[in-house]
Image (tube, rainbow, N blue to C red):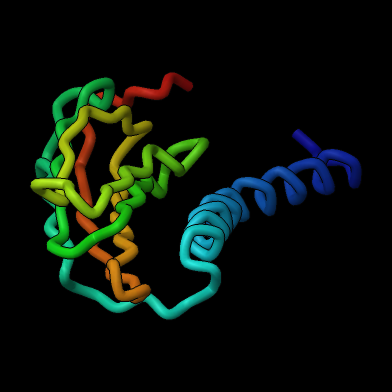
Length: 138
């Protein structure tokens, strides 16, 4: 079998495109975080994020998130085609600053929670979830 220049070029372009996929996903996550925080610094800790270490099915992964003094919490799935999952807003009279839901995960990936605190600061938590059967189709 001999490769023509056209075949070689096509293979090279395909390899570069595949290598750039994680960069585009990370850029989408970074853009979503920047939009939520307005570009402010985000510190680690101060957010409770409970996610299973292993999810047998990515269609329904239970997630719990909370932060004392949070005005809003944004939830992201870094490896999904659309990383933004949900934003939970809490009023001043909210009894608890926490939420629970079930989300879809395309595969093994990080789940990220960013909390906007009442004082205007931002806090972050992250958990890696290993998915045995993806939930976003392919």
